[in-house]
Image (cartoon, rainbow, N blue to C red; front, side, top):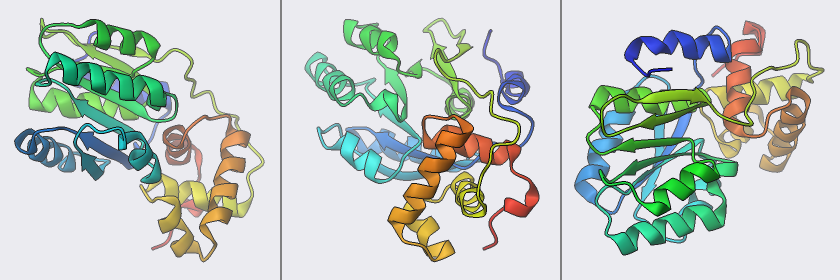
Length: 240
């Protein structure tokens, strides 16, 4: 379908009625000026928190995973051909897109590296000339589980991601602690922050979250947060 601002209602149909959970973003950009701009742009959007940033380095995947990031944005729009190849190799070899949604901001001219990453499963790809509002919408769309491409002709396309489903069980047998952990997850907290809120060790929180994800049939934290936002009743919401 064509991606326009009014398409947000379609995203809600796909993921269930209700709010979008707070999504944890990480930005990768070698240039401080564009990094600050992206951070400011996303930080002002509903349901978005930027939890970290970095230049393009081999440590990016481990750092993003340690921060329990939901979506990582690679701004590769001004990288040299060698820099683009290095970044593509980091993403491909670490298999980032298997547990974290990835958005690429690519140069105007397409490249073999970008094409290969899209075929491998990168969830979002936009060009550097994308309008600010549309960039925010793309970020929110990927956070909702959609794959988004923004071609240079200005007609972005959105489509459900292959292999992703939000057909959750109607009444999964979740324990009270599993429901509490999911509710805090949807509010954008990391496992460490959740452990402090509910007085359990970080390892125990991780165990409850893993069990809950298995029961509701999701593969990553973002999908678990979507489930909590749309399917847990108000009694499961965190009390801060």
